[in-house]
Image 1 (cartoon, helix red, strand yellow):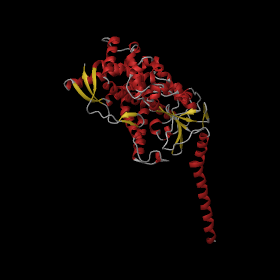
Image 2: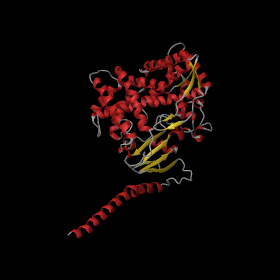
Image 3: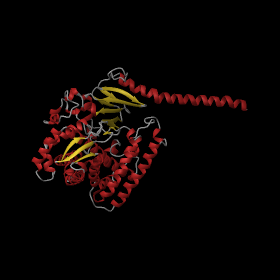
Length: 470
């Protein structure tokens, strides 16, 4: 009897190995080859590294098929595509789940539509105008702290501005999110920043299958910080339940209780959307503002033009919403800042079904990446000075600045364009207006220009400026 079990066990082993081989071939070759074949029939091929690949090509990251798209016609068609069948890549809530969850940034379909319709109206321009006094107050607090340091240092201070700018943006988003309980939001800021750093820290295992489940130091830190931020936000929510205020948190809570949740609980939807509004609200706006101060410090002639305009428009008064709308030079400067250093350096989408954009068919499951920096710094679109800081190019608006306005996408494209762009632009206007009207900025000898691309494009070593009181 025993001698019969050996060949039988061997047969089962061989059968199991054959099944595993077939599954392996299906998932790691046949399925991917089917997608590649559909693109090859359209003349789109994957990279042979020795060749220039052009504006549209296919490449792979593990099992992910990614269509790189900077062809202007294709970008325009993607921008005009309104169907929910064009969603966000799964890696946003898989690999970056501790940070983004399944909130506004990473959700898809009807769940995303409900979240967008809930949150976006709170960021319309009319709502932002009501926040101008709050923004001015936060910027004025920054100016006072810098004034004190300049006086202490004898007229000029060599300062790394990053933390001060992030404190400015975090104070604003905390007041918008949590209303009278914004002090609790300010305590949330360092925890969220630590979570960003944990998720953003590179390791040798990044991108490998199942790596997000391994108990590496990066993952352990991210899991711990995710739990801590979850608890902090839920503590704020519990105190907020009896509140009658109409702040962003109250809106998110109502939306979670009265809408489609997908696979998430009400509490998880609230926490994920709080993070998806709060974190970009301080980090993305903060990083862009830091780059903007660096560019203004590098170009004193534009500092002078902004300072003159602010003095002409505001006189001895602090700016209000009406004054900000009249600052044409300042708007040009900000448009140029976010062209060179946009908050998000690429736009990521996923085909949830087989899609067609003009002559290009994109099979279901393929990710689409639009590289914002490639479009924003293309000499064919912006002229030979595409890499130079020249706000004058926006003197006649975006249509006069470049050959193809659809190439200017600092806030993304299409239906999923960043809903916070009005708030971000207003924050930048107020901050630059108050800082430039009070100080002269120059680049510090300690500054090292080293843009680092992680979740965002940020200065690796911070931005050091010489700040002098005017």
